[in-house]
Length: 114
Image (cartoon, rainbow, N blue to C red; front, side, top):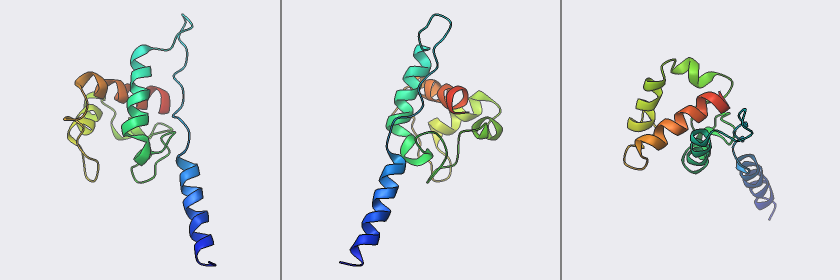
């Protein structure tokens, strides 16, 4: 039982750090969120947050927040290619996401997380 308690605590901390939703899309001048960024947020929550962290702070995958993603991929199309084709341990999403979804999640990571 003594061995079980620390293991339960570690699992609880890990699950707690992954809990929650990614950051909201800011409202535009019309008082509404950009619909493309909102779609990107939904894609990020479903396909990216488990590895890159809820707020893009990294984890299994690299950090995306604080300008890290724009620094790594100054050109939008280069980041789109990585999301589509995968890189290193990151899987390809070209078979799971549409081109529109890939562009939306790329914008979300650059404009909201970045």
